[in-house]
Image 1 (cartoon, one colour):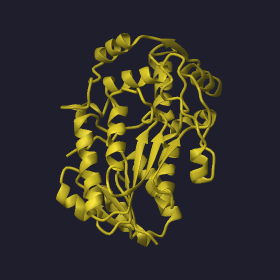
Image 2 (cartoon, helix red, strand yellow):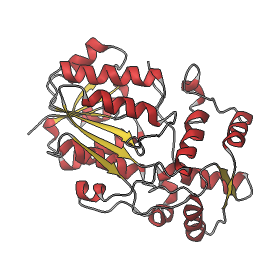
Image 3 (cartoon, rainbow, N blue to C red):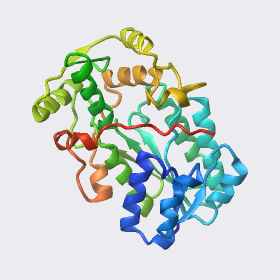
Image 4 (cartoon, rainbow, N blue to C red):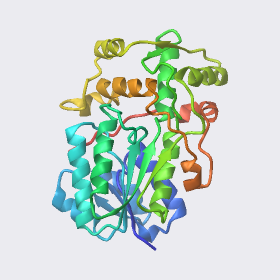
Length: 314
């Protein structure tokens, strides 16, 4: 069997992918990594080969990746030049280590010609860089996590009198569970497919108003949508202390705000402009099952909150 190396098993996404691989793939052919030894202890106790992956150290990362046929690179949680540098280090290390295939978790909209968002631009850059390298790839463009909007729904009900205000307007998104995206990454690692881009979308295209209508019906908690402008969104985030970017002190503020306002505002704008309304059955073809519907997610919404974002970058 081919050796599969999964990075970031300490995070929500990586942990779910690890669970799928543990169920589906021979344990002796798995390698799990994380930035800290402590996060790997439970896998080591299962007999899984574990390695510490330092994405700031090109030389040690080459050693970390050696012996792996496929490496899963889950995109970094920070954004901008720091993220691109980390991705470049990882991709270069994979090439130097002789890795044959790289699975990369990108984002919906990365194939849109005129898209320009703080979040997506990094993925466009990374995708292009991967394609220039002498390595096979499988790129997964994940739709927006439904969990992010589930958490926003709960917050709107509890804190803003049942009104969720943002700049998405009437744009559509095939919202998908983060768990489904993590499942797709695990299946992509096991897949024989190479040199392809797959769109990992949810089961239905919805506006944010549609999303909230389903959520309200299932939970019995009424939340309605209110459109606000990009400038109004920035003003709101500034008022509650959300950082504009993921530079400087973001690793600390991420404990309370797992995203930055530049990312959220430009992302919402792209949705409003229907630059992210991609809808395919690539997930089903890859995994053999349909993704969760938003209704199913809200029927079990306590297990579909966004949670903390792993911000380790040193």
